[in-house]
Amino acid sequence: MYDASLGRFTTIDPHAENYFDLSPFAYVANNPMIFIDPTGMDIEYDKDASFWFKVKTTVQLAAGWVASGTMRNQLNTLMKSENTHTIHQIDGAGSRVISKELDAHNESKPAPPEIETNIDSDGNITMGIKDAAAHDAAMDKWQGEHAEITSHKDGTGVGTNIYIGDGKGMKDVLKDNGVNKKVLFGHELTHAVDNDKGRMNTDNMKPGVGSNAQQRYGTYSEHRAVRYQNAVTRDLNRFRPFNKLRIRNEY
Image (cartoon, rainbow, N blue to C red; front, side):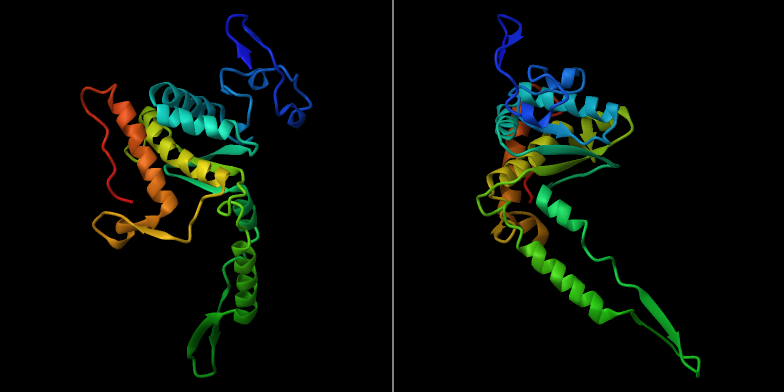
């Protein structure tokens, strides 16, 4: 814990055993220009994330921390968790959150089947899936294993991988597909908290609003994420007398 009156840390990092190469009193691996860690817990960047991506993301998270009590509560929950939440850089726009267990299991998903073409003696062409039965059996096995991974929704809780799109221009520092980045983080951090608490229920659907079926129905976690996203939006709009951010009314 940091004592501002002394300018010193009075306790060691509670996760110091994960970082044997660093002093247990070192703040954010001695790199405060890139990382923030108000509680000493684990929110980390993927090792392949670029310096510029880390700077942009840290600035947005820090600004959200200051401007939005909702976002501050989300970050506090994750940083006090015993689970580790890792921010990954992806090309282009968009974002998503997935439990580490599900993400790791996705790596073992069978590759798409090969398509084979046959030409008979009359010149007729037929196409089909090569070794279709074997591929179907492999997919059934993988899907069964995937369904057995439930820690993200059974109350156990698990760490997450948070994938954030990295734009190339200055406008992309502030927005992602036209959405304010801090608002985007408010949405995705809600999914990370749901994973962390083991309440990422993706089975049950809840009626919503919107112009099509996809908008009218969403998972409970998606509804919760939109609700918190709108709370962050309202927090930010308090500082925007003009050009206020849009409240999202679809799921």
